[in-house]
Length: 271
Ligand SMILES: Cc1cc2nc3c(=O)[nH]c(=O)nc-3n(C[C@H](O)[C@H](O)[C@H](O)COP(=O)(O)OP(=O)(O)OC[C@H]3O[C@@H](n4cnc5c(N)ncnc54)[C@H](O)[C@@H]3O)c2cc1C
Picture 1 (cartoon, rainbow, N blue to C red):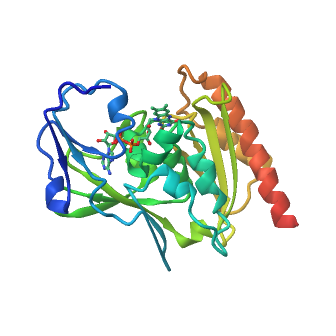
Picture 2 (cartoon, rainbow, N blue to C red):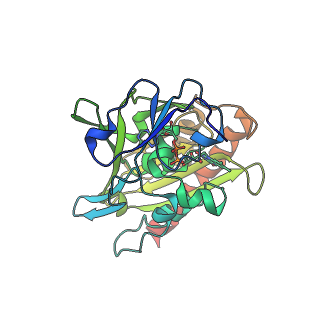
């Protein structure tokens, strides 16, 4: 849609260009920004010409630039020892949008929009990814993505702060994972999405998102018993109701999926 209040669009070429004036917002792929009215928005600063390398691998893990597109992330090549690799395409395919959106929507834009159904939030929270945030005064700060997103369309970014990258630690990439997602219709928005992950030390984390207003990570020293897991999932308080699902349905499906994931990872351990 036309954003009739926008008077100026700047293309950032360096960090100095990302100092935002009042009324300016960063522009990633624009798939959310141009999808609805944006009251108070007077300018856009395009981040996509900054030349950030989309995916950087190192001994520490994987750094994903905020401007990396969902399509680029989905195509990340397989890696020996990265047992968590299927999560990239599973998360990307949870954004059920057209080819055009998939190829232009960015990882950073998805996280910063902070919708409960943000699959990049699910991926990042489930892999203990940290967010590198650029502040307008030239300093940086880091936050776990799971803490950055605080509610539906709410996060801890202040005006002028820009998400530069998210970093997934190697131990998360080396984890065994299992994934479940459901929506009310075949191409519908996520009702609930669960990712279970067992890292090389045996530590286990079940991350619930989509059905909750923010991602909820349930941690265990080892694969929990059915009763212990059920109690923790039922103890979550952040379920919500909207057109994409009722809170009690989201909760019931999450309890069911958690047990399926526990069984799946347990079978792999004993195999
Ligand atoms: C048909 C359709 C289906 C969709 N389905 C889903 C879905 O299932 N789940 C979902 O979560 N979303 C969905 N969306 C919304 C949107 O397309 C996605 O959230 C997308 O990932 C947003 O990314 P973007 O790069 O286009 O963000 P943009 O529209 O460019 O930006 C979104 C917001 O993030 C800010 N921003 C962008 N990059 C940064 C950055 N690096 N640092 C700080 N702030 C930044 C912008 O200022 C803006 O406020 C859908 C949209 C459409 C049109």
